[in-house]
Length: 168
Image (cartoon, rainbow, N blue to C red; front, side, top):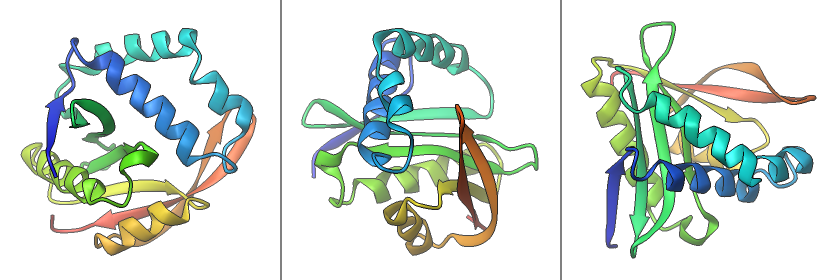
């Protein structure tokens, strides 16, 4: 399993956004409205996302990384501080071609390390309720279900399960 993890930078932010957008399209087909999945993959929306992500690169208590396998970007994650003084895994996505090969665990473990470096000993993650694979993954990694919350995308409101990882 040959891979590299790259911290988000001005040089790779465009790859980060493209992987994130494509992973959403692959992961949420049938869960999130197709119109939104097509919209976030348009050149205009990708360029807007790149500019937003550039603004986050040097923020304290915010880290993002890309996964590169065989010289191709195929995954990413992002962590930050929550308003409740703990870490949050805001996103962790893999392209379909590398799912179920152990890379999710690699990204997750690195996310925990980054949250620890930020000074937190617990972390939460929100996961769309209808995303069975991801819910099972976070439970397998030791997450404890603590609540549901609404997640709204355009005119679609979805349920999100929140998992807590204590004493990381």
